[in-house]
Length: 67
Image (cartoon, rainbow, N blue to C red):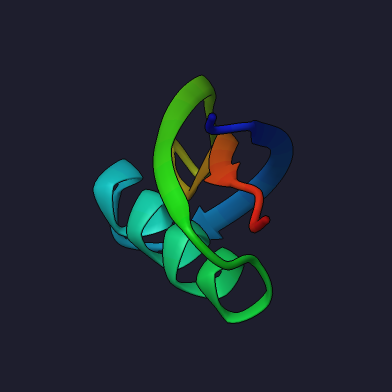
């Protein structure tokens, strides 16, 4: 039997949404073991002077609990 838990995190990047997702997964994997997947719940940008200055994502990370 497999039991998983879901936790929500926020990550940001000045490059792209994809980079923000990657940074979030990399950081979560330092604390959480057995990450099985992630769902991008929200995407947001910060704009300054008519240009995007920051990409932000809210992720739901799924990880399998150990026996």
